[in-house]
Each structure stands twice: as structure tokens, then as C-alpha cells.
Length: 495
Image 1 (tube, rainbow, N blue to C red):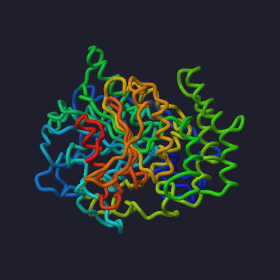
Image 2 (cartoon, rainbow, N blue to C red):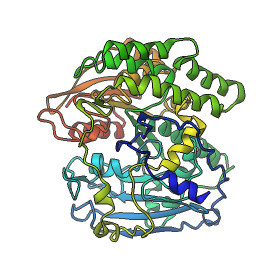
Image 3 (cartoon, rainbow, N blue to C red):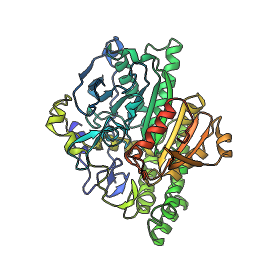
């Protein structure tokens, strides 16, 4: 079994580097003969159950954050037997003792959160040649304490056995790491602070799952049915998310035919074929519906039906419609060198030695072991909207955002998700129109607010929104504005 897991860490032949893997050149594809995922049960963490937080970390490594007097800690949490998650914590640059605590999760499934740290919103940003990094003045630790987590096991710098295959299973590991982190004397003072979940891409599944799990665990702690630390959970943010495939997949066709940058992405023959496969009897939408229906009938998704829907829809709809253009930024043709690849930087001995990475761990952008596990369950095609609705209705301040040059989780699809939500703010949201959003007086996109819910369409940004600027706005400048406003419990407004 271990040999199988190690072999899946290698990318498929001819795959492009990307958060969402290509299998046989199909974005988000499923192998013809999908391997059975490792379903070994995760043993309870006996150390944590005994009240000990066995974190292993290095403080103030000097890597990434160079702002004077801003502390950091980087290391590992053994959440269970052969389950070791990597985390990197950075204090807020301002008032860290009272500042909120936010986690960041990249998607995939199987993507390392070092992408978010070094390409997007961390205290530093990779240089264009991919060999080093520079200070990021718009890092999100300007306002919040930040934890970047490589999860599930085998993703990024994490290591062990890859046995997680659904977003809800992944949520359990994130919860355990947070309990261990906040139990550590070094970080226990953050237990009282506002807590937030931020994520992107497959985070459209991760965000609702992790958030819903936190609410459930908090309720059990309040009822005296679970021993643990109740999180002061107040905020959820999801960027360019895959949440409700049934309403999002038709928007691949819509975006391919009508976007603000490259129209159309493909010729009429390709778009017509994709449309047939999307709407025909037994086609993409029917197969997604079958996946959804299996959940209603059985209480949990049918792996075979959901995996088949992912395979079919991504082969005949999602992949063809982007044509020759980059699926993360349609303004450019593949391959796109931006954001710069992190492989050389994150495997450099001068860096890994300072942050305590074991010699047997080799950083890769994507864990194919994790991706294959998720493909085997078909978790991709399950509907996370009910979890998102529950989180919004619970009073959690929620912001969804999307870069308008992104194809893979495009804004048309994500806006369709919001239009189909059934929350206490849905009628207010439906009655409003999007309005222009400015940052420092410059056009930055479009916004819509309803109650504690907001949607931000970010102009000139690709899949990794904080990695992009727009006109005079620097990379990450607009993203820091909507992040800070959301964390303050405010609607998104112009500055």
C-alpha cells in the first residue's frame, strides 16, 4: 500500500503544473481504472486525548516574514498515527495579541497551502524567477494572525499515509490540528480571539465542510458532550470556489462564449459539442443530478455515480471549453509562467533546513495520492451548498470572491452558486444589483452585500486573486481590502 501511495505522488505524464491536476490532459480527470482509496480508519490521537499538544516547531526561522518583531512558528502536528500535518504560523504585524486568528487552505484537492503563502497572501511573495522571495506589503497578516496548513496528509510538506477522500474527512484533521495548536502554551492566548476560515478553489468544498464541522464541534463542547477548545468562529471566506457543480457546470459554457477578455475561448464546433454533452439525456447535468440524488437516498454520496460524473463532465465539458487558454487566467495562452513555480524555492536546502523539513519530504504542488482518493469517492461532484447555507444562517460573516479572468472556477459559476443559496439573506440578495467597487478610488470590480453575506467580483484577477493587481493597484492590494473589511465584520465597500 505504501508503494501505491508513493507512486501517486508523481504527476501524470504530460501534466501541466496547476492546483487542479490534469489526468491524461483532462483538467480534473479521473483515471480509466480509478484505484481504490486507502480507507484505513484514522486512530484517535492519544496524545491529544490526554490533553498534551505535541507540536514540533521552529520559532522565528527568518524565512519569509522579515518585518521586525513579528514572530512566526513553523512545524508539524501529529494528528494521529502516521498522520502528520505541516503548519506555518505568522503573527499579525499589528497588535498580534488581540488580532484575529485565520487559517488558509488551498484547494486541489491535494494542493499545498504554500501556494497561498508564497504566491498570494503570505508575508512574502516569490520572485518572478522562482528562486527567492520578497516582502509582501499586502500580506493578510497585516491585520490577522495567520496559519497556513498543508492538508490532508501527504499534501505539500505534510507526510504520512494518504487516507482522506472527502472534504468532511479533511475537516476532522483541520479541527484536530487547531485543537493541538491552541493547546500549546505558546499559542493558548489566541483561544479567545476571533477565528476565521479562508480558502480557495476546492475550498468551495473545504470551506463549508470545515466551517460546518467547527460549528458542530463547538455545539458539542457547549453541551458538555465533547472535551475541547471552543473556537471563537466568526468569519468564512472562499475564493473562486467549486461548491455546487450542478449550477456551476453550465457556466463553463457561458464563460467560454462570453467573458470580458478573450471571446470566445473555443470555436463553434467545440462549444456545440460541449453543449450537447452538458444537456443531453444521460449527459453531464444528468450525471451530477444522479450524484446528488444518491446522497438524498443513501445519506451519503454514491462513490461510483459521483466519480463517473466527474470523469464525464471534466472530459467533455470543462476541459474542452478552455481551449488553448490558461484555465487560471484566460488572458494568456498555456503555459502561463505566472504565478512563478515554487518547486525550486521550497526544495532549496537553505530554506528547508531552516524550517525543519525532514530529508525524506520533497515538496510538490499537488499530492496525487490525495487527488486520487478524492477522485475515487467523487467528492468533487457533491453539493457543499447545504453546509454553506447552514454556516451563513448561523450568523458567520461570509464573503465569496472571484477573479474575473479565471476560467476553472469562474465568477459566472460562483455567482450562480450564490443565486441558488437558500439562506435568511437570499431574498435581499436577489433583489439587489451588483455595484462598482473601487479601492483607493480605482476600479477594482463589482460587489453585492446582503446581511452578513457578501460577493466580490475582482477585476483583472485570475484564480489566485491576491496574486494579481489591476492598473495602479498592486498585487494583493484589493484583496487585502476585502479581507480586512470582512474580518472587521463589515460589508464590502469602496475605499
